[in-house]
Image (cartoon, rainbow, N blue to C red; front, side, top):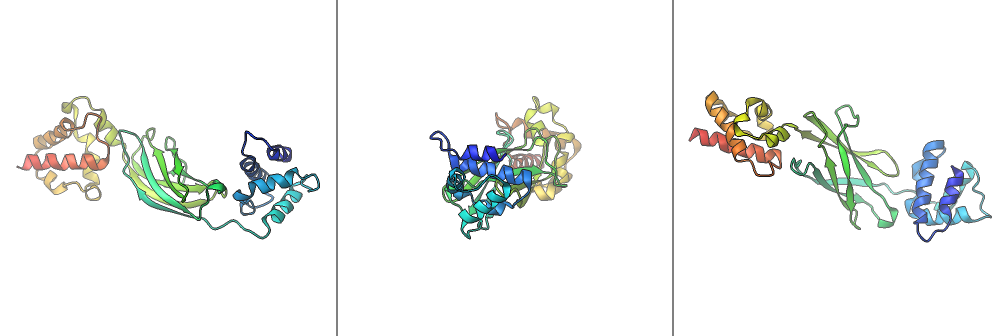
Length: 259
């Protein structure tokens, strides 16, 4: 592995040597557990590479590499990074994605710092099918991340954890409620196929979602069936994009039955 580190440090016009060295240093760190992530400064990659190429600089053992890092850092330590989330959107069932925006501070583009969103359940376990499509970053540290939940098969409480590329530690956790039922509503071919099982979730979480539960309770079974069918009749060609869109259509259908 130390040989891989030295190879990464070799000058190459076609590759970003500093980034390769940083990556190899973190692999060495996680494999040996001989030093902490804080000692690797991402913006010092080129300086580390130069030291590794210097034949007069001993870097043949892990201890010597650690001494090199301390020497090159010259008293500098990794800055405390704060990640904040400015906005989290509604899950889009047509595009099958959720977007959220935030800020990394402090941030310098040459640090190649990034945060990776991971979807976990209430126990903190990774969610099969909850996929981070990626994040786009701006020079000021602002970013937009995208989550794909298209393969998640159960409704429930989920969390988005942001982990730092270098520290591999949790920065923050954002809770969100995810429903699979809107997919079934979007996939119904005929309005006559709409039934209570497609809409139970709206009634169960009526207060949280803003559903007119009192108005719904006043309707007869026949009127309720008409509500279900109207939601399907008025469905956009591509389907309802968000839970809020379905709630609005549901409430409108209740009002229509009351008039």
